[in-house]
Image (tube, rainbow, N blue to C red; front, side, top):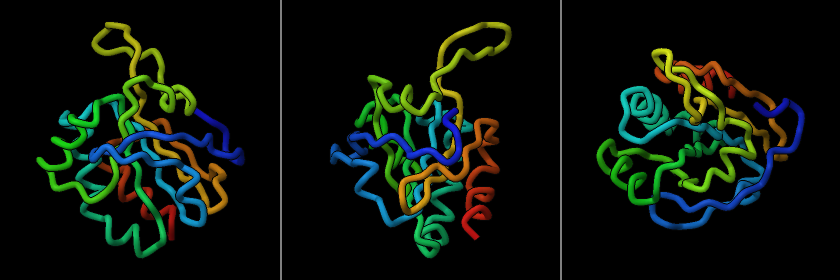
Length: 151
């Protein structure tokens, strides 16, 4: 996980529609940048739907939500359409951004060790500085917790 107080690494990634987004495009807004393991899995779906349901409250507070996983643009599009997601999903199949944000880690699941994305949420301020980071994210609680951070 990256340290608080540092400039968030800039990046360019395609969204669910194939449009390229740069982190620097969002200077002047607060950014909730969250990394999740996989589209259409129970925890990731709960987290995404939670952000989507609260999306108007986030925009009211001047915040942008960006979800990142290593799924493809096409997978993100299906995920967005299936659940009517209201925010941007970014595809990082080469894991460039996932690794830059230090969320590609060894994970243990039922005693089996593998590499994967550790569910992590960053809050980045209007100047591009990381002001909050959480790598102990509970998928269902994350959207509400992040909304409180913006108060």
